[in-house]
Image (cartoon, chains in turn blue, green):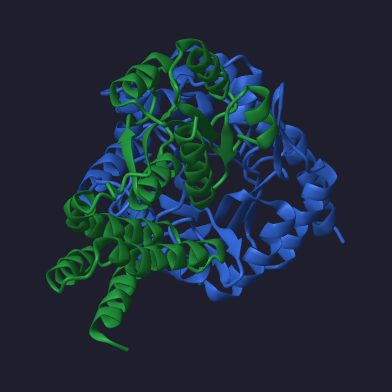
Length: 282
Length: 218
């Protein structure tokens, strides 16, 4: 299955002001949000993620949108559903709360559970096809999100962000790749994987480690190469062609769901679609 | 190995293992046994935090381990501080005001730098995230800061560091400026006229020591 690509940079290209929470646009510019979803569907995505990465109550409060969790998630889901072509699926996107559990911070797991429950219920009520948890760096937080999502009865996909270290792949909190994904499966995730922080070339090795070790479908959503800061903003250095070939390599390594994260665009997905389709017809 | 050396070794282990209760207790034992406070710092705590830093650089220690090691060191420092001050060491290498710039909510890295600076002997005032330039300056003036550290995690908030650098220069305050954050580079730091830059918490401590020392000799 082909997921979608990066959303944040697409919003910025469409005029989102720097530092403004992307979720605002579900209320203020639904047509621009919908246009991005439609572009991904047209490029060949089977699934798009709702514009709700930061739409849990904790993160919304920080962005000036406190108390509007249900409203924003409902608006975002409606926009994504309206943008569907034929059999496209809508995944309710759930990102990190932005708060830290001890020892880095003072948040509690109960606060996390409550926040994820509120967001997951709002997304489910608004008719998304599945819940997609992503970019998690703390296994405890990811587990709380999976549990909350499961309680809605929808299928749950959960993805974490790993980096490569001499001893293996770990989140910044030190959660190891395989053990973490297994823990998420135990918590009830129907599909698990990794996204962000890593180039498509580097993520092939992560998939090769994870896929054989995990009893559910595995996903991979790498970045479009490494970022460089330029006067015009952040630029990623991967080409859509190389990216698409890497996604195919990930499928060979056992991934069942692939897509793109930061820096990827509909063009990346278009190339990925044609490379993956060509493989199918070999 | 005599008792004092064993105590220092145990202090080192307590810091390395992130055991703040043990670190505080052992620091108290060291003082009660007549150990010079400065020696306890330099032969017990500092080796522990440096080893934690080395393990972090090698990808063996992650954020939680580094943070708990720094917290253990802070716990021990809190016990040793009065003795250090009494012995004339006044173990504050410098006064720092740190924060993430206006419009930016990211603070893991900034908080880690704050913890590491504090663990390494700096007096740190952490203003949090989303700090306007004016507040950096007001606080720096209030505490007679040696160093202002400003973090920006978004390319869109990096310009605030430039703004802060200019404001600091025209304020007449003596504080040096160090900048950091994932998109921040040496060339950006130089272009905006900052005094230093670091891309990880350990380098930040080294740069801070250098800047504080150079400020003291002005």
